Length: 283
Image (cartoon, rainbow, N blue to C red; front, side):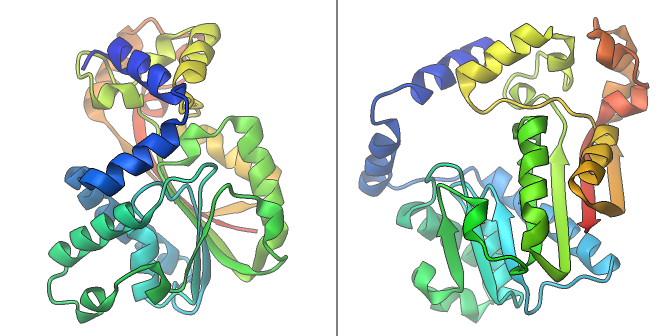
């Protein structure tokens, strides 16, 4: 789909009266078929995130976890519960998760792990130590109560100043063993459905155009590159204990031939073409 059509469709859907209620009613009547490719990718992402946590001395067992940006399908929170988390707080700015999407997630996990008897025994959220916080208010969490904060492909959707404020607010919520694990997708997400554009097409846009697209879709990206996040983390009171980056070679080759905005034109091809990042943070 042409990215312009997608932006237009998202703009309309975001402004429909009672849009969230209508979508929930549709799911209850007709069910909800998730993007199985995306859910399979989520399994791989969580495996990478958990490995990064364990490499830095952290563990999921016995942890009280906060997931930032759970969305419709709580794949990672369910796995965290099965892997020994004491309590998992799922969070969203708006309510997305419901019984229909939870059931769809369970069906996917049962198909992925057919020999796991624990999955077959789960009937609802009440069977797991899960709590859904939406709309999320970080001040509702007691100080020192969170052992682990995780997110998958969420931080890139948060404006830098808001992200800095969120991380500062979360700092006192972490326990003595507190850690953060974040997986970030730096690609232009409009490219996911429109392969006619590059993975860094949005870096060619002036700030005004970028802000306009974000305002239309209400789920835009901050355009921060991999090497820019650690400074933000440091300002919020964290140190990076593990950092991994994946460079997309075709984008690296293409990068310097694009009409990039000055801020990005000053970066190296590797910095521009880093498409995925894993960060493990400690206070």
